[in-house]
Amino acid sequence: MDEAGYARARTVVLVAVVLVAIGLGVAGSTSRSLGGALVLVGWALALLGLHRLGRAGTAP
Image (cartoon, rainbow, N blue to C red; front, side):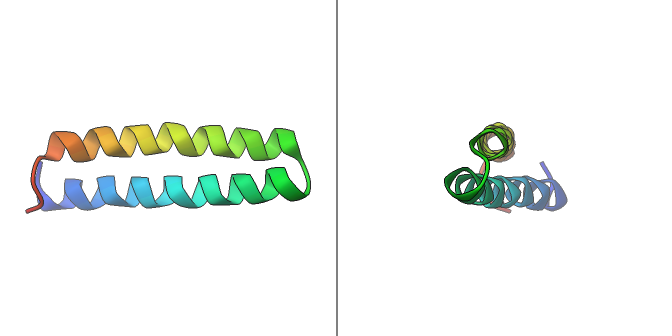
């Protein structure tokens, strides 16, 4: 994987972390269903991003 692909994979993981954090905040304050959905989407993105980073190998 090239350097741009590595950067995209890192960005996906960062977005996933932010979504999980927002989802936990929403679930704890306003809507458990919406917060849970955001957390699940965040987990799915985290798995995708970690898979891409694993396939990328070592950092360029």
